Image (cartoon, rainbow, N blue to C red; front, side):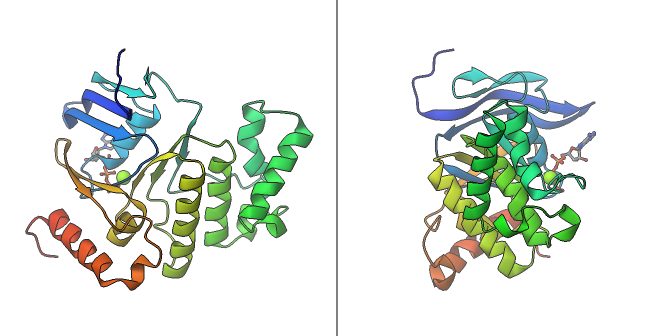
Length: 252
Ligand SMILES: Nc1ncnc2c1ncn2[C@@H]1O[C@H](COP(=O)(O)OP(=O)(O)OP(=O)(O)O)[C@@H](O)[C@H]1O
Ligand SMILES: [Mg+2]
């Protein structure tokens, strides 16, 4: 295909339905390379479905999805996906879990893989937990291990489905800072779903509000990656504006 623009992800008239129920109807969307996008929208509107299509877990009924100029027919090597349930295996120690993607990709000798894993564990302050099993870790530690497992391959696309929804407020902020740091370090394009408007405003340069049928409203967010954003009134004003758009006149 020919595409001279800077869009990294492109959806062209993508339609997806579960049996007769149409979830996304002719959705077209362009996402820029290296930018961060928060997907918000009411429960059941199709956010996870959209992410699974971009990941290559699902196939559109009609239309096409391109990432980095390639049409997506199956799961792509440089796409990392973080599930809400994390998917850590109870029988894998931290060091094995984080090294697994590199072993699966045959990304080098065992000793090289070990060194890469240990240096990332150090960066994420997980080195002291390297021989622990998931059941021996706190929720926040498990989240950091799951994050390390997707970062170890240096992905150019990070997809996350409600990455911090099970964490308490303080741990959540720490994980959000880590996510931001690595998204910027890797210059990765990031698309994540959240129900937390404050998270969307902290981590999303653009906020995509998904509506029934797959129409989008795009909100440009000036508080993305702003240091100490949570100490600024404007940040909360932005959150309130987005909340109003999300609720669309409804009260809860
Ligand atoms: N495997 C499936 N089979 C049939 N219908 C499904 C399936 N998965 C999801 N759906 C339906 O598709 C719609 C969109 O689901 P999806 O999981 O994408 O929503 P969501 O926006 O992520 O919701 P939430 O915020 O609750 O996670 C929902 O109505 C859901 O019931
Ligand atoms: Mg969902």
